Length: 273
Image (cartoon, rainbow, N blue to C red; front, side):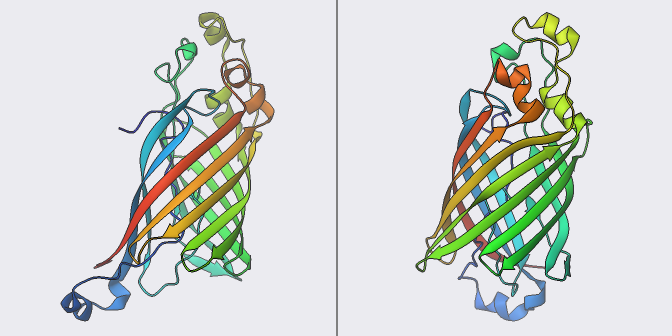
């Protein structure tokens, strides 16, 4: 079962998609490679904060998804990339749509949240851009995503990753992270109204502003088991800063240190339209 916590409601594109090597020859002959797609589906198990800012941890299970046209070179990716598709290439900068899933929060996750408003899970969508200063080694990436409903605000995430193949089967990646949020997002996730403070005697009223939300670091290792299967282990650490760290939801009830460890098993296969 997928829990309602922050860590469990994220979908990240898998790094190192691979092509399924077996498919019927008759299907291969009948379909043009232009109508063929390579799809990577996987399942991940994570252990991390029950919601953003929580000091309590829990296990969660989630799906993963990635796709590309047959014949396109597979691109490396990090475990915290959201689902994207490149539509344009402008001077080596790839640009396209990106979608993700945001986690929620309720007293079900922590009884100390009693009296505070719940944060509902949400889809978000926006635009990503990425550039490889060193091809297949160093990547710079940015995502900007707006919640699709509920007025949950805007997020902007910045990534810098180094990818290093090790032998024929291993790929190791690592890099820093920076996340910003607008005032709506910060108020929804870290603000406390006067009424809420009166209902929960452990926190005081707290107003928030938009700005820098967290800094962090992500490291991952992917092992290719076969042309169709791969497994990835990863660690995603972030430190809440600014109003996100000063909020009593974090400073009184939770923790500014947020760490998620995960394991993903994925399978790639070819489909045609």
